[in-house]
Length: 205
Image (cartoon, rainbow, N blue to C red):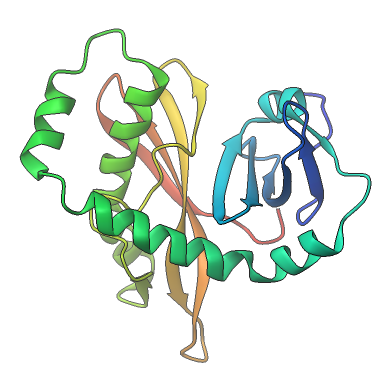
């Protein structure tokens, strides 16, 4: 495990390349996973890193502007709205063309290829995993199609052909019957084209 210090969940950070401000949404030393949520003008997104990638690209934000404080309070709602629009456009794509594209993947796949394969494989097996650990006490955010419950751009490569992806579209029912948003993480091996395992992020990590 890297000796670098993991950022605190909720910490504000700034991307060194362009000054983009983000907020640490997941910081997990046990899985070497850091998720950063960002908002810029009318765009929002989530980026995933291992600790070494994160340390190279981000640094602590020394001052939190009033604008970011407002954005942080509304970023979850804005992210869902943006994702609904994005998924609505993607839903028009042909399922057959996506399968054919995956079949034509070269032996030496690129990170983007692995991310796309991980997105589909992790999305399709998520329901079976969730039913195995908690029955039917879950649902997906509106617009999360069966093939697109994980984000292709948000896939961390932890080893050749091995990616870790996160989905923030899962709603899990608690003991009071209230559905709350949780992060579902998936590890995928593109060499064998199979999901290695799923787990739900611990909010205390």
